[in-house]
Image (cartoon, rainbow, N blue to C red):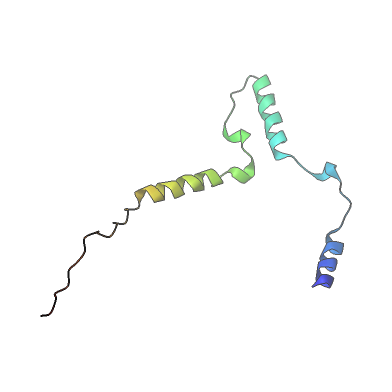
Length: 88
């Protein structure tokens, strides 16, 4: 197991170059500001990152909550005791 872990670490190790990373949020904000400076109307979809289009976590949570509120609540068992017949 240790050799496997060492192999994975060695194969994944590389020099880190931050210039290769893209901050999609920053790109979206800069694009929105350029549109605003040009006097064009801001589209709300343009400000969202591509990963959030379609279905996101918030939509999933809302659907989950809706499903929970639509479920019929289980009835609690009645507290009345049933009496058994006594033999004489």
